[in-house]
Every structure is written in structure tokens, then in C-alpha cells.
Image 1: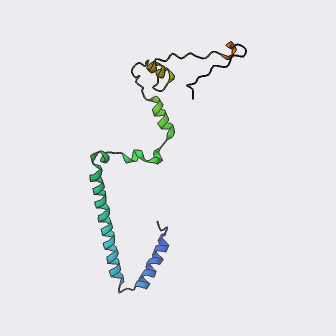
Image 2: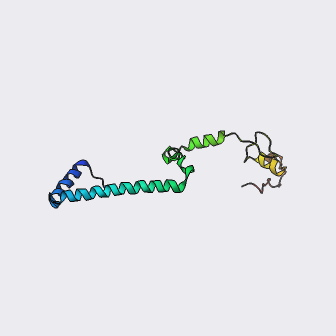
Image 3: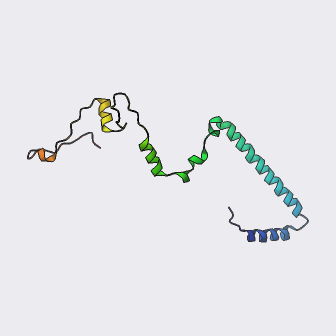
Length: 133
């Protein structure tokens, strides 16, 4: 936080002893100890209050698994692709939920496959799919 190393801390303590003086130093050390205890009690009470407010379902969360440093997009994509997809109502087994075959099975669409360009007559426009993105 303050980026102070050990040597700098010792120099600051020596300067504090010289500036404050040996008479007032014990009182300041005692006050610093009280502040540290008060901060520790405040943090403990705050943690307990947050735990009470959030309830039991949050206590069971594995926070380490949600750490963004453990995020591996390749693993997430691999797991998503390897999940077993159960076909919905009217879908053929093996159809992926977002596939064209699944959509056709759900909507009853009978789309034709476009003809190859070699089958087009001279001057005939190429087939156009108005539903394509």
C-alpha cells in the first residue's frame, strides 16, 4: 500500500521516536494498539453481518472456483461443446439445440437446399435466403 521496505520502516520509527520523544511514545503506542483492536473487531462484525444478510446459500459457494485468474476460455468452450444435449420436443435425436435441423424440426419448416451455381440458367439470379444473417 505505502510501498515501504524494512529499512525505510526502521528509519521512520527512529524519526518518530526522536520527534515524539520517549515520554509520549508509550501513550501513542497504546493508542495505536487500541485502533488496531477496534479495526479488527469492526472487520469481524462486518463479516458476520454480511454472512447473516446473504444467508446459507452464499456460505456454500466455492469462491476459489470463481476466481478470474482460473478462467480458461478453451476449457469452458470444450465443456460446453461436450455437454450432452437432450433433444427437445419434435427434434430428432442428435440434433444440437441451436442447429438448423433442430429449428426446422421445431417450426415444421421445409427449406430447400439451394441449387449449385452450375444449374442456373443464363440471366437467372442466384438463390437468395432472406432468413440468412
